[in-house]
Length: 344
Image (tube, rainbow, N blue to C red; front, side, top):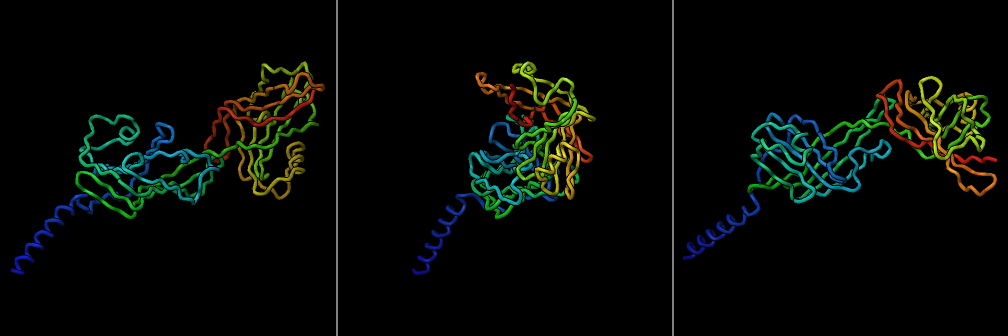
């Protein structure tokens, strides 16, 4: 009698475990890792704050992709904004921020499949598992480069504590390496600083320059123009039509320089106005404009005032900067800076 009761209880327990043990899908040891690690690729965000990264194993006809929304992440950051050695975390879910594992009936082209709002109709998905939880970690590492015009970084994507589910299956991983990509970013020559000039410049040669906050970068504009005056007369100022100065690689140049040591204000005057380089300061980067224009525009502060005051603004237009090492940098439009002039 006792034996029968025990058998019945055991049978009931097995039945219960059988029913509930499979309720969330079979926990499988299906391999979602790719070996060797394929190239990590991305799509320029189709909509603001929407991002996609993916890897494809063409030989096995499978892919891993992660798509997410973020108001703080930038897929193409400025070099100075790259959070080197800092982890950016994205929480995964089953709706907006997803890791997706897929297998296909044929090979796919990543850009066509992941970067279009409507994937190709001739691609069949034979297996699909979608994350229900987990965390995406994004980290950058600075790389050594000889380029004067670009900085290079490794961008590494790692997934932690994820669960992929679908079609009655579930895969769990504490750690999954999605991949690494190298990104090359044009250095920025844009910084806020006081625009200065060499006021005692003689003849038709003129110099404007500025130093960044740390005094280890500079932007200077040297040019020759017979019609320009560093302190123009009132009749020579037009608030409607800017003065256009054409750049060339010889005497009309915009030059960006980075230094290994801060340049003092007095050294800057000697350097830019008297062409006397500071002692003990070495140039680590030098970019020189090879084409484009500079527009000099004027805006009057208050027409009633006497003497009259104008804000003079220098703006780069359609410029190309080149260096001894590195690819050219193209700048469509950039304000160099402004200064105030007083006209009697």
